[in-house]
Amino acid sequence: MKDSFDIAVVGSGAAGIAAGITAARAGCGTLLLDRRAAVGGTGGFSGLTTLCGLFDDEGKFLNDGFAREFAGTLAESPPMRMGKVWVLPYRPEKFRGVAASLFASTPSLQTRWSAPLTGAVVENNRIVNLNRFCVGAVIDCSGSAEVARAIGAACLATNESTQAPAILFPLCHVVRELNTPAAVAQVLLPLSRAGFPMLSFQPSLELDTITVKFTGRADQVMDVIAFLQKQVSGFENCRTPLTEFTAAQRAGRMVIGQYLLTGADVLAGRKFPDAVARCAWPIEQWSADGAARFRYLPPGTHYEIPARSLRAAQVENLFMAGKTISADVDAIASARVMGCCLASGAAAAVLAARWLESSGAR
Ligand SMILES: Cc1cc2nc3c(=O)[nH]c(=O)nc-3n(C[C@H](O)[C@H](O)[C@H](O)COP(=O)(O)OP(=O)(O)OC[C@H]3O[C@@H](n4cnc5c(N)ncnc54)[C@H](O)[C@@H]3O)c2cc1C
Image 1: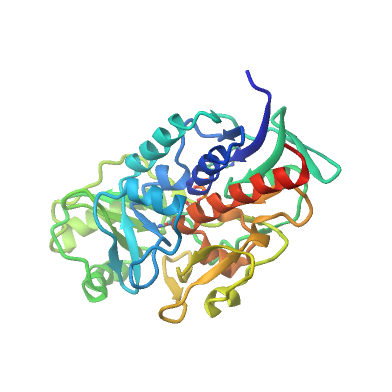
Image 2: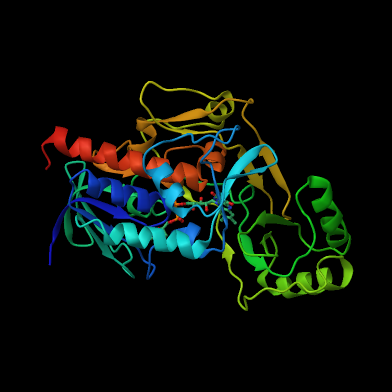
């Protein structure tokens, strides 16, 4: 068994999938490890059904390369407009399946499942060993900066009060249109009057099914469904196939990099000379009562993510992607959507491969 890799990727969500495949395609012997038993991360396992952050406000791809390739293979229907933004509806099982088949067809990528990060060794400002494998460079795609924490590199935590966790579940047999804010408000009003925490609806590719994001407790889900069945027309026969409900964590931890992307950069649509990815998603804030606040970029604009936000400040060969990039609490509330994670994952892999060449570490 191989015990030395050019690049190690920790985490196999949207960012890790992009980083692992791109690093291996760049000719690097790549190791990807995840504490879960299979590939997918939040996009594959939390019940999400909309891939956000891929498109500008005309529905055109913001990033070519891996993000576009992955979305193209995942897509079963065209992108759809949701208010001011465009999203790609998808099935989580297909998200996992597309990633698994890309991994299987990429010989220089080796994977380790049910393999939590157990430790990393730093020598002369470089990570030289990770989970007892010798490594040339590391990409932290753990969503919570696990590599950076293991080596004591500086991190920032997302503010959980503006990034409240939510329970996601499919609701089948819903025969009511929910495609305008007014139509949604008619459903939410009685729920809120009855004292339930707020929920929001996302499209699903399954027939007569919607995805519900619920910012309440797991033990309230069945009461919400019973209330909808009794009180809201079009929901009389609704039900969920799930029997257990777990909250997905929006908040993560960001590694301090060579540049800290800010909320002001996002809202100004700032461009950078060392840009490696584009994003136009608004800054999303979710409070514990389920209320959402969206701050949009000016129409027709996008911001860029500089390479410096994907490179750790203190450790030469540590790169970040997805929810761990060097961004403040506001900026990550935009850049954490999966379209952007795919783009930053691919970009981090290219940067790591280039660093290996230029530093002579390969
Ligand atoms: C409630 C909610 C709703 C959302 N809605 C949307 C939406 O509609 N559309 C959208 O695009 N985005 C949405 N997002 C945001 C998006 O899903 C995430 O920000 C994104 O998936 C993060 O991707 P990632 O690859 O950075 O991390 P993740 O997908 O979280 O992947 C991290 C991976 O690292 C692994 N890992 C963690 N720690 C370790 C360790 N110590 N050792 C080994 N492996 C480890 C995990 O098991 C996981 O597989 C939502 C998020 C939440 C929580």
